[in-house]
Amino acid sequence: MGAKICGITNIDAAKCAVENGAKAVGFVFAESKRKISPEDAKAIIKELPEDIWKVGVFVNESKEKIEEIISIAGINMIQLHGDESNEFASQFSLPIIKAFSIGSEEDLKAVAAFDCDYVLLDSPREKYHGGNGKTFDWAVLKNYDFKGKKVILAGGLNTENIKEALETVQPDLVDVSSGVETNGKKDLKKIRDFLLSVNLHKQ
Image: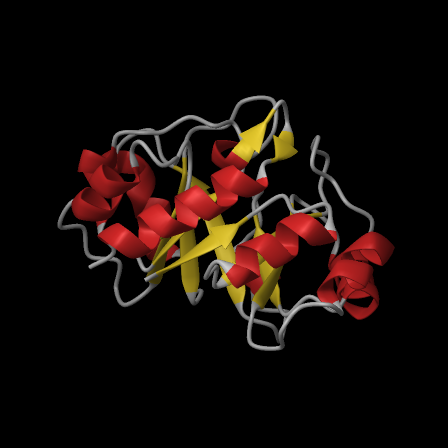
């Protein structure tokens, strides 16, 4: 069990995440209030340990653009957070995290059908494809067979609900962005407190 701090835009937040036990940090290259340029991501990534997952988040981007950003920024995992197909995902050599919006148990059928290493389960879409800071009904995930895929839980997580989330879903990883922010900016104390809560309650 580990944690991913997503929507990183500066070195202080990235280092705080890593120093407090995050397994992964996420950089958003799609339209978002947390969007970062490949060059700025590169400057942060070169300061981080090699074994940390540096995840690039993309939404319905072209293969060529994703590969260009990978080569500039130095990310080592790809998160597809749009309507990308199995065929599209299979074109990349890096590990794939495929995100799904979960509104009901019916939405889990698409998760089961997708061939990837990791699935990220998020709340239903709003203006952006993620980072809405809202939870969904975790009960629909209970006892669901994900066919060996690693499950990443996202959507509205924070220090208040992380214990319940871990007990209900038992994910392989939890993903947080807005839950460790104050006024839309990463809050170092909230990052530390969230990661402490994850370590305290993980199975």
